[in-house]
Amino acid sequence: MKTLKLTLLLAGALAAATPLAYSADSTAGKSAAVKAPASKAHVLSREELDKLLAQPGKVLVIDVRRPDEVSDIGGLPVYLSVQVGDLEKNLAWIPKDRLIVTLSNHAGRAAKAADLLAAKGFNVAGAAGAQTYEQQGGTLAKVAKPAKTTTAAAAGGH
Image (cartoon, rainbow, N blue to C red):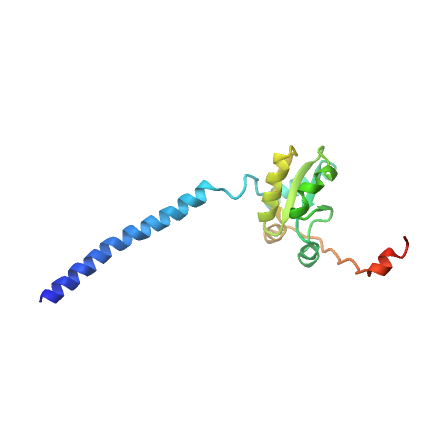
Protein backbone atom coordinates (compact mmCIF):
# COMPACT_ATOMS: atom_id res chain seq x y z
CA MET A 1 0.00 0.00 0.00
CA LYS A 2 2.88 2.37 0.83
CA THR A 3 4.44 1.59 -2.57
CA LEU A 4 1.19 2.44 -4.35
CA LYS A 5 0.90 5.80 -2.52
CA LEU A 6 4.54 6.63 -3.31
CA THR A 7 4.05 5.72 -6.97
CA LEU A 8 0.91 7.88 -7.20
CA LEU A 9 2.68 10.75 -5.42
CA LEU A 10 5.64 10.57 -7.83
CA ALA A 11 3.33 10.29 -10.84
CA GLY A 12 1.40 13.34 -9.67
CA ALA A 13 4.60 15.32 -9.13
CA LEU A 14 5.87 14.42 -12.60
CA ALA A 15 2.54 15.28 -14.20
CA ALA A 16 2.52 18.65 -12.47
CA ALA A 17 6.11 19.43 -13.46
CA THR A 18 5.81 18.37 -17.09
CA PRO A 19 3.47 21.16 -18.28
CA LEU A 20 5.66 23.76 -16.59
CA ALA A 21 8.77 22.49 -18.31
CA TYR A 22 6.99 22.27 -21.66
CA SER A 23 5.56 25.75 -21.36
CA ALA A 24 8.90 27.25 -20.39
CA ASP A 25 10.60 25.62 -23.38
CA SER A 26 7.93 26.68 -25.85
CA THR A 27 7.87 30.24 -24.50
CA ALA A 28 11.66 30.51 -24.71
CA GLY A 29 11.61 29.43 -28.35
CA LYS A 30 8.93 31.95 -29.24
CA SER A 31 10.62 34.87 -27.51
CA ALA A 32 13.91 34.08 -29.23
CA ALA A 33 12.17 34.11 -32.61
CA VAL A 34 10.51 37.43 -31.85
CA LYS A 35 13.75 39.10 -30.71
CA ALA A 36 15.67 38.45 -33.94
CA PRO A 37 13.59 38.94 -37.09
CA ALA A 38 15.14 37.38 -40.15
CA SER A 39 14.66 40.45 -42.30
CA LYS A 40 13.05 43.86 -42.46
CA ALA A 41 12.27 43.48 -46.17
CA HIS A 42 8.70 43.22 -47.37
CA VAL A 43 8.06 39.90 -49.12
CA LEU A 44 6.10 40.67 -52.27
CA SER A 45 3.03 38.70 -53.29
CA ARG A 46 2.52 37.65 -56.91
CA GLU A 47 0.09 40.51 -57.42
CA GLU A 48 2.52 43.09 -56.02
CA LEU A 49 5.38 41.73 -58.12
CA ASP A 50 3.25 41.71 -61.28
CA LYS A 51 2.34 45.39 -60.72
CA LEU A 52 6.01 46.29 -60.36
CA LEU A 53 7.04 44.25 -63.40
CA ALA A 54 4.47 46.16 -65.46
CA GLN A 55 6.77 49.22 -65.07
CA PRO A 56 10.02 47.92 -66.63
CA GLY A 57 11.57 51.37 -66.94
CA LYS A 58 11.28 51.99 -63.22
CA VAL A 59 12.06 48.58 -61.71
CA LEU A 60 15.24 46.53 -61.53
CA VAL A 61 15.05 42.88 -60.50
CA ILE A 62 18.23 41.56 -58.92
CA ASP A 63 18.27 37.77 -58.88
CA VAL A 64 20.63 36.67 -56.09
CA ARG A 65 20.54 32.95 -56.91
CA ARG A 66 23.27 30.84 -58.46
CA PRO A 67 23.08 30.54 -62.27
CA ASP A 68 22.19 26.83 -62.02
CA GLU A 69 19.19 27.69 -59.84
CA VAL A 70 17.99 30.23 -62.38
CA SER A 71 18.31 27.77 -65.27
CA ASP A 72 16.87 24.79 -63.35
CA ILE A 73 13.93 26.60 -61.72
CA GLY A 74 13.33 29.55 -63.99
CA GLY A 75 13.19 33.23 -63.28
CA LEU A 76 11.88 36.52 -64.52
CA PRO A 77 12.48 37.52 -68.15
CA VAL A 78 14.75 40.48 -67.39
CA TYR A 79 17.00 40.73 -64.38
CA LEU A 80 20.45 41.53 -63.10
CA SER A 81 22.20 38.43 -61.79
CA VAL A 82 24.38 39.05 -58.74
CA GLN A 83 24.74 36.24 -56.23
CA VAL A 84 23.98 37.33 -52.67
CA GLY A 85 27.59 36.77 -51.56
CA ASP A 86 28.87 39.11 -54.28
CA LEU A 87 26.27 41.82 -53.86
CA GLU A 88 28.16 44.21 -51.61
CA LYS A 89 31.25 44.33 -53.84
CA ASN A 90 29.07 45.05 -56.91
CA LEU A 91 27.01 47.95 -55.54
CA ALA A 92 28.64 50.41 -57.96
CA TRP A 93 26.99 48.59 -60.89
CA ILE A 94 23.47 48.86 -59.47
CA PRO A 95 21.58 51.98 -60.58
CA LYS A 96 20.19 54.10 -57.75
CA ASP A 97 17.44 55.59 -59.92
CA ARG A 98 15.45 52.34 -60.07
CA LEU A 99 13.06 50.69 -57.64
CA ILE A 100 14.69 47.37 -56.73
CA VAL A 101 13.15 43.93 -56.27
CA THR A 102 15.43 41.15 -55.07
CA LEU A 103 14.66 37.57 -56.08
CA SER A 104 15.66 34.15 -54.76
CA ASN A 105 13.82 30.81 -54.63
CA HIS A 106 11.58 31.50 -51.60
CA ALA A 107 12.63 35.09 -50.74
CA GLY A 108 15.02 34.14 -47.90
CA ARG A 109 18.26 35.22 -49.57
CA ALA A 110 16.36 37.93 -51.43
CA ALA A 111 15.20 39.45 -48.13
CA LYS A 112 18.78 39.56 -46.83
CA ALA A 113 19.89 41.18 -50.09
CA ALA A 114 17.02 43.69 -49.85
CA ASP A 115 18.09 44.60 -46.31
CA LEU A 116 21.68 45.15 -47.47
CA LEU A 117 20.62 47.32 -50.40
CA ALA A 118 18.22 49.38 -48.29
CA ALA A 119 20.98 49.96 -45.72
CA LYS A 120 23.22 51.20 -48.56
CA GLY A 121 20.66 53.77 -49.69
CA PHE A 122 18.93 51.92 -52.53
CA ASN A 123 15.16 52.24 -53.04
CA VAL A 124 13.97 48.67 -52.39
CA ALA A 125 10.37 47.64 -53.08
CA GLY A 126 10.84 44.23 -51.48
CA ALA A 127 11.93 40.65 -51.90
CA ALA A 128 10.28 37.87 -53.88
CA GLY A 129 10.65 34.13 -54.32
CA ALA A 130 10.62 32.66 -57.82
CA GLN A 131 9.14 29.36 -56.68
CA THR A 132 6.64 31.13 -54.43
CA TYR A 133 5.67 33.41 -57.31
CA GLU A 134 5.07 30.38 -59.53
CA GLN A 135 3.07 28.58 -56.80
CA GLN A 136 0.84 31.68 -56.55
CA GLY A 137 0.07 31.52 -60.29
CA GLY A 138 2.93 33.57 -61.75
CA THR A 139 4.78 32.44 -64.85
CA LEU A 140 8.54 31.97 -64.77
CA ALA A 141 10.76 32.28 -67.81
CA LYS A 142 13.01 29.31 -68.47
CA VAL A 143 16.60 30.35 -68.98
CA ALA A 144 18.91 28.16 -71.05
CA LYS A 145 22.21 27.20 -69.51
CA PRO A 146 25.11 28.94 -71.24
CA ALA A 147 27.42 26.75 -73.27
CA LYS A 148 30.56 25.75 -71.42
CA THR A 149 33.76 27.17 -72.80
CA THR A 150 37.23 25.89 -72.23
CA THR A 151 40.00 28.15 -71.04
CA ALA A 152 41.81 27.86 -74.38
CA ALA A 153 38.69 28.73 -76.38
CA ALA A 154 37.85 31.64 -74.08
CA ALA A 155 41.39 33.02 -74.32
CA GLY A 156 41.69 32.34 -78.08
CA GLY A 157 40.84 35.83 -79.23
CA HIS A 158 43.20 37.64 -76.84
